Length: 111
Length: 121
Image 1: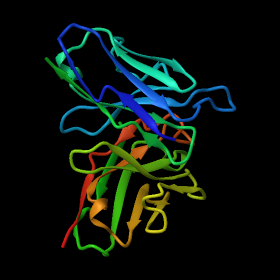
Image 2: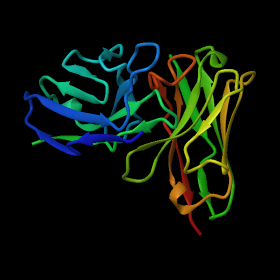
Image 3: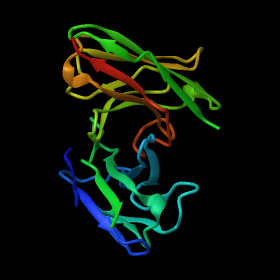
Image 4: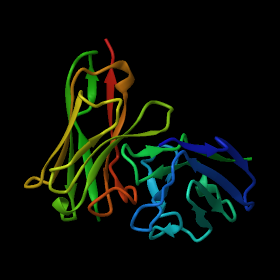
């Protein structure tokens, strides 16, 4: 399953919103009714960290300015007001098909 | 707090072998699926391999199938990645990653700090 993110680079002004798109080549809806699309953040020099699982569920400690949405093959990660600590690369990942696959990554930077 | 500590990376010649280890602590290791994810220098994340909690099911990326073997020792809370016939394109940071349950459908909720593998003559 190919995961395609856009844009690949996203310069954002502090306090402004940001949106990242992720599209899968196949449906991510499981027979159990869940949709297995997850988002990860990788800050410079750090290991990745999961932000959101099953499209829209935020991990513990993730600020509520992060939100996920979408269905089927089309998904979005939104940051309502970008802060300096949000700089990094964001990846979507599908969890329903083998092999697991990540998007190419979207680099968020401050203008 | 969950801890995952990778080791075993280093410089190896093309065609060589290496074994990576990941020591896990602060959770019931055998109850969770585990994976290896790698990141080539300046590139994105690539899932490499996964193993079920009991070790009876394994999965591989096409790029490593037949060359890499994932295994685990639940008595020692340790995950392994045996890498053979290494190629220059295997050069990457290798991360050990814990699934939130029996499968990695919901991704990985804990990651190690990574170990660097460099394949070069």
